[in-house]
Length: 479
Ligand SMILES: Cc1cc2nc3c(=O)[nH]c(=O)nc-3n(C[C@H](O)[C@H](O)[C@H](O)COP(=O)(O)OP(=O)(O)OC[C@H]3O[C@@H](n4cnc5c(N)ncnc54)[C@H](O)[C@@H]3O)c2cc1C
Ligand code: SF4
Picture 1: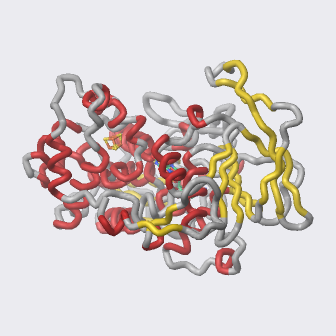
Picture 2: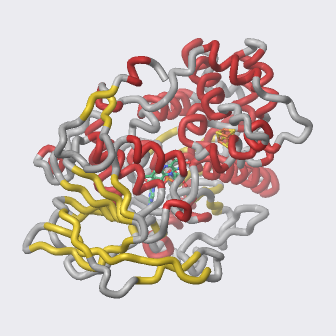
Picture 3: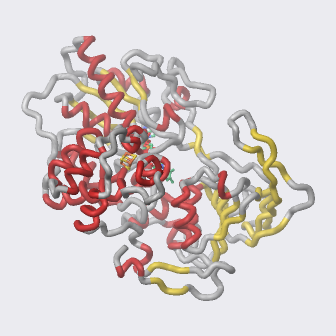
């Protein structure tokens, strides 16, 4: 970490108790190592080139990690970047936000032998950022465009990866997205301090320059039904993600200043992108000088608590019903949040939201972990008469997301969904119950990871290519 990033200032004494709260200068703009060349080289050289690359096996994209580490160690950075791009459409994004401790790095043989993992994600980021800086990353060039088109619904990582693979194969591609900017959760969900927006924007710009069309502010179900869109294309991909927030239906849940996580994070991301956000500017969605309580223990909850800290909240508390060891969020994120002054109240559940018009406090109860349920996780059980009150000016609900009702939204009851609302696909072909319509990403898996969305997008592209070739459709429907 650079000296600049390591400079800390103490916050005033009114901020959360016990822990000595530290706040990075420059509005916490950066959390990453500025991975200078020598450090990348040093880390790459640490790879033992072991015979069984567990890191590669545990990377959802099966990235050829040992080989690009070797190339980076030898200073052959352009080749390293080309190799990284051969399996991944956004290596610089994954290098920044993959939970490496659960994937590649957690399975590094050097880590397993107790000597600390090779920092694979940082090297991946370094290799790709360097390639961008050097101008080695170029838009796709098509000489002989095929007269067939694919429509993609959703400009998140699954849709973008699929679009790029299809375009490389000379097909016409149009991406439809209901937001004003492409990127999906990379733009409006994940905060800027984890993934800087320019990193996403330069990728989508490159795709546009490669001839992929983007139709923003276009919502399937509102602008056109699924069937109407299918009429315009030879095949479709649904990659719409999951956006329905899980509710906390407790007494007082309608009080003012209780927000779903995405509303809070989107406002903050829009502000960062320079948009005018009335509800942020009038203070409603701004945590400044507020006592903030975040309910939930996943990565979205961690993004909320860390965003609130950066907005200079008076205090930030995270209520989670299990203990630290059983938290779904990445250990690294919890560590970062604790470092920054977030107070975790483990083994606690909200019971009631208290206030007259606005939220004033949360009544919570203590929890103990009981027997394991069918998934093997210990069940949280309430401890009688253990209630306690937490002062709150703002509550953020971060309990996860479910799929929207797509057959209804898209106006197509023939689209089969699972009991969880995710789209059912043929696992081999990724085709939905409607011929010629495929699906990928969170809308199939449920809330997951960017790296899995990219993997699904790439797999879907392979299946769509096979489908188009087998159908020998030789006309273009798209405008
Ligand atoms: C707050 C937060 C933080 C996260 N942090 C991480 C992290 O650190 N690391 C990580 O790996 N993963 C993280 N994730 C998960 C990751 O962002 C998702 O798994 C990934 O973005 C899923 O990609 P996707 O393409 O399937 O969907 P999305 O990224 O959700 O994109 C779907 C797109 O479809 C569009 N859309 C939806 N409905 C319609 C419609 N009817 N018509 C047109 N367009 C539509 C949406 O506007 C959106 O742009 C995080 C998620 C959240 C919510
Ligand atoms: S894509 Fe993710 S899991 Fe794979 S090597 Fe990169 S950081 Fe590791």
